[in-house]
Image (cartoon, rainbow, N blue to C red; front, side, top):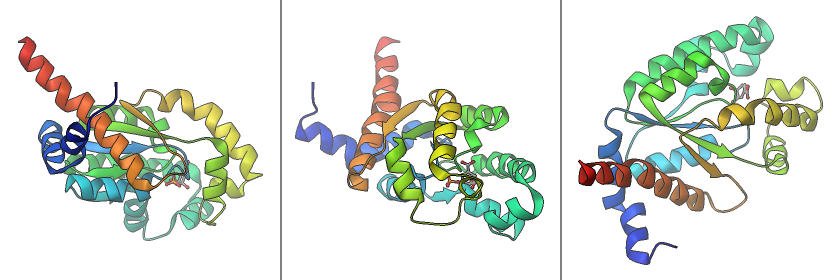
Length: 205
Ligand code: S3P
């Protein structure tokens, strides 16, 4: 059954946003997914709709290191980056509520997954290979994609990571539609997961 216009307004509008913020408490909405899934672009818009701060974990890692991600990888290696990534995300999760976009590898760390589960609601932006390939091809800032044929690397990462990303609280299909369409879908899912569920629990108790 689809939602009527009134219900859509309620979920996507100011009222719906306030209800989601209330249900979040100190928790963050944490976007996960592969490079090119749209975590930053969609995260910024989602934060605006929810009237929350937006934080990009990769930018925070760059700030903390005083270097961009390409240089961190080439000068110190991936293990060093992952270590910093875990620590920075653990720190950022203390600042909720907010919308937090994480780098594609972050959720693969068991420690980070645990922290996200405790302090956030995870939203997986799931995208098909062709979407990821087209979007990541526009920029030259992903060290992992320079290590080999980008299509082969992304295919391998899909195989390795999608079964783990599937543990997210919410999954939304990222695709070539207006960002606001995806944002609306996330708001609807957050509402169903957090607000309706909470109301249901209250009614049942
Ligand atoms: C990575 C994704 C990147 C960045 C780093 C490693 C990954 O973030 O953290 O290059 O392991 O998938 P985006 O997903 O924001 O591109």
